[in-house]
Length: 232
Image: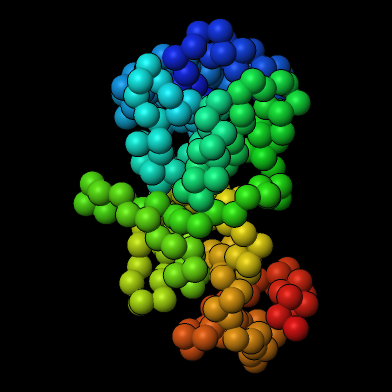
């Protein structure tokens, strides 16, 4: 596992490194420290991390300017910053957590537990999913997302306007970020239940979900009972 820390204060960077090492214990973790935004971006371009710790104020560089690129990427981002007024916007853009400075071990461990435990949801609500298209970042309001389909190393966002957008994050990572209205109904599908009409039982005991768009998606056998309760 590779964890990247972009932090220009050496004392805080080393503290993050030490606490993160303690959290993972004997698990193999490679932690890279970068003291500038450009060094961090170069490191990401060289090898994609599994997790990024990002400060929002780096020697005058505004980490928020590249945040859209980070949350559109295949890895999770945790903000570590004294700019707590930026927290609401950061969550809206899809960061996994916002750890305010100064922080203690309990607070950092809470953020890391969110990273390793998909079932732990953040309290704040994500509003957008950032996607990359032709080198540009576009923000998609999650209210426009009908469902998300696993597509190899990518995921497909299926939107109310009939368009599809590719996202670099896996279904598992997106499920951690999205609110409870998004339900994993199948190993390959994550659905906005506000766009669902009813559960269908087809011949051969196959379960399917009829959407308001009249599309029909498969429901995994292990997901049927829980989904049925939520659809009542």
